Image (cartoon, rainbow, N blue to C red; front, top):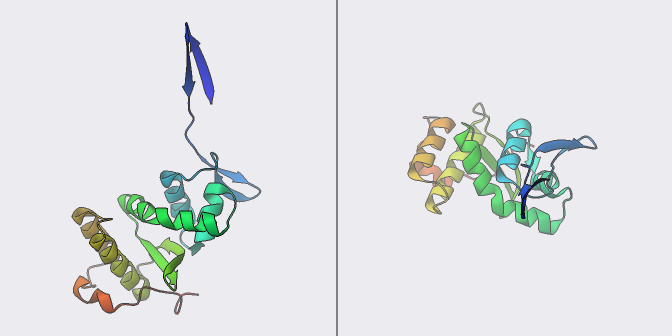
Length: 161
């Protein structure tokens, strides 16, 4: 932070957080969760699976149960930001909890089905607008019919270790 002084007042200019490299790992300079910077981190590294712990380490520089739970609460916001940039986020579950995320690989039918199912869930929970939902379906691919997605298993770990 920098400060400028004027007669009788001090103005503090806050710097925007950035992705910086510390000990070979990308982290947010503010040591706080920032939706835009986490989305940037996922877009840079998300062609491979990223664990929720990786997201927590990027934001808070450590990964424990509490930080992973906090990261899981924000992932739907990351989905929306990444969608604005023309990508779709795929989730991998371990039971009921999100364990890993990655950017959609359109060559994988399993990932496309999982992404379509998750888009439908987010729409039903009002986490996506109708326009965002339509955009996600366009990016996922026209071959998938959203009518039969409830039968799709949303985990991709069986075919993509």
